[in-house]
Amino acid sequence: MNTYDHDAFRAAYGKVLAKWPADRESVTVPTPFGPAHVNACGPRDAPPLVLLPGGGGATSASWYAQAAEPGRDRRVLAVDLVGAAGLSGTDGGPAPRTVEDLVVWLDAVLDGLGVREVSLGGHSYGAWIALHYAMRAPGRVRRLFLLDPTQCFAGYTAAYLLHALPMLLRPTPRRVRAFLAWETGGAALDPDWLRLQEAAAGFPAAKPVTGPRPSPERLRGLDVPVLLFVAANSRTHDTWQVTTRAGELLPRVETVVLPDVSHHALPPGAPSELGRRLREFLS
Image (cartoon, rainbow, N blue to C red; front, side, top):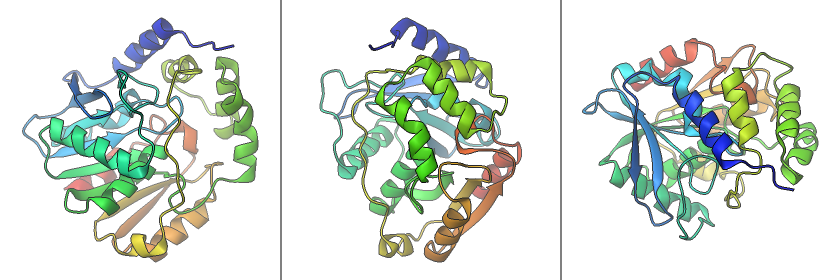
């Protein structure tokens, strides 16, 4: 039985969105896959920073804790993923089926925002999309920010997949809460953000685009500065393997291990260091 409640989701989304900086505004841009919803803040004429959320119940609203610091001198543009939880819609259009479709979608988002060159970032699945986009559109990405990316430099652990399976097979608020409690080690999570994750259970999302990890050749050919943040307590993948492989393959990577935080406590649970380091990297 699908437990998804559209009104409850919109209400929970709005409560998290209220935590954004006071100058936040919503923008909708057309794409071949339906309208994309963007939450924006920062000076309108400043260089753009586009942020993508993770998959599952993650949305662009979840970037609220990181938006203010780079938003001092960047135009922060956080996008709800196409076909996923959030306010971007397909409106009867086709769902993306390939990585190339996602590139077309993100090209259209940037075009609709009037952005030619961009600093691009993402968390988890959003980082996977950002990395693939940067490899396919290097002339458009000036800098790349990856927050505990999945399926980029290492695979999922067996324990993670085992604990995620019940939630994936039949998502319910109770299963979402139990899974997050396990992955975060029982960390205290923002109750409004947690309620949004629960409200997204059963969201009528399209099947996400997946694929193999990028080849070593493509990673070595990425001539773009990369800032990689890795969660020290992540149960999603092996932190050492992620940092080691990224360091070996990416020509221009700076890696920061975030202490005392897990994969699913991000982005809102990231230490304040993240915003400062990100702002320095963009400058």
